Image (cartoon, rainbow, N blue to C red; front, side, top):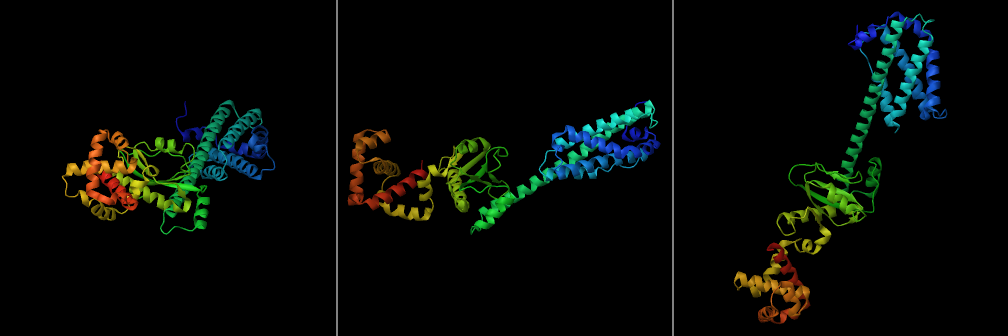
Length: 393
């Protein structure tokens, strides 16, 4: 009759078999360990006490638990010892594959030795068959338990690293800035190598949520009130493409590259850039906006009340004109300030006839008089006209 459950599998082996096997367990353990050390490279290192200790514990514990399951087939299976072995392998930074290979080899050695001694141990063919099936089912259970412990430890370690990185992000963005020593200590425990420069990146979801796909050296703060990143070495090769690719599904503004301790300042600029993009002052169509490309606009809009006050003074000569005429003269004056004083060049920039430019420039000279000869006034005019243009693209 086919065995259909775990209990039936163990009950199929006569309980008395455990007593017959117990006297040979010590020799069997030595044979298993000898073959494992001979054939599994990771265990062929007599000087590595950790590997040898784990191997001896695993083999002895497996054999003893195997006998107990034969004797008491209905007792619940407690895999904790092998989960602990799996956790230990993860804690030591080793891969679980050598351990599992060793256990499979050990099971084959045990089965081969038992079949050789079947007559002396009074194991009839049916019992030997059931015993073999139990050995390999038990091996699967041991492997599963070790894998569970290994994965649990890896997950816990990953979770702890993630928590430390979140704390590191908070520390880098704290105001006033944290001490360099505090940052260095936390970075070390978080497995993060402090770079010379960083950039803060402000984020907004764009469409449906999609987790960014970013390398592990990018510190991610999606659960913050204002989602953000800290990107190390932002001007390094491939960093721009990495952000373009990894932030699909997000709108982002990348702050200027700054020393590590100024990360909060870079992020503040990035957040301001994103806010200006939302208002249409900066290009809203760009998925990734770079502060470095818009520094003048960011500076101009740093204090809008001050810019408004300056505008009221410097644009006063235009205030009495119709809005459409104000727009034409303001556009011409800004082009003249930015691109030189030749009518031909201004006309080319505005795509209008040079004679039209000359006409408008004469009007501006009448309205502003000697003010246009003052370099400080010209500088202030360019500031307010740039702000006006950004607000009315």
